[in-house]
Length: 323
Image (cartoon, rainbow, N blue to C red; front, side):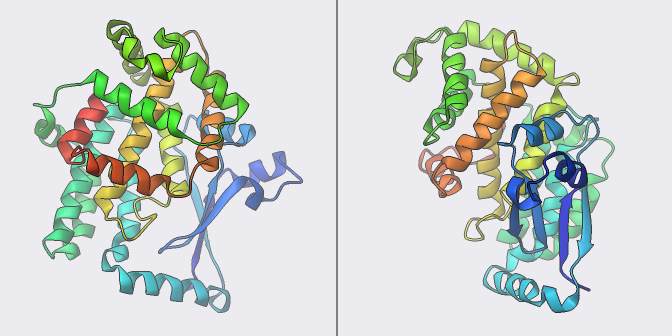
């Protein structure tokens, strides 16, 4: 069987709409351990609008390259797995991320907690020399109808709004070479927080921010949750999570994913007061453009920074999610 090529189900419509652009012009093309993967670039406003406003769960299509054309990708995949044996479970882990993120019977915040639990569990299997347990665990975990026992592990976690806000603003303002649209997004965030800029962040009225955070939770309990869900699913593909860099383990990649989620959460919370869905689409488009203009070592930088701060365990990530 040839090497798979996976594309968004909407790629045909996007290609027609964005003609004469080719898919490579508005999609990332990455050769992962499992396939050649196309992931739409949200910096393109038309792509962002199509992806974020999709009300059904995002879906992807798969075709196989002929064997003679896929041999180079098969060899590359085998080389990665030989160097990093846990990469053999990349596709199962990808299935875990997507299945949990698109489980709309659970609130968005709780989906992140479920992913926290599951990734920590699978990382433990690898660390304890039992990676062969991963496929069965993921199959059983994603098939659960009652996640209450799992959620019980997080009942002692208490929100820390200041931690979440500081972490999110840090990533948002650290992106290099921000475009004009992104500068406007950042300035709006500061304005809504009641400060003049990053040098006055210590003057934020936390009561005001907490009220804004409550609105976020209310919005995520409704149809607007799909906006952020679709961004997260897109970034799972864009960053080839959870194995963008095989030198980092699955849990490290989840730490980056949590920081990325938290930044998007803070962006929504602090940018959206008085705005509509189309405004968020524009903000994410600007954010994505700034991400792409940033240092290629962004993921490594974020993971190392969280490690160095001593806040990279699953309790820290749960606090970040709930704050």
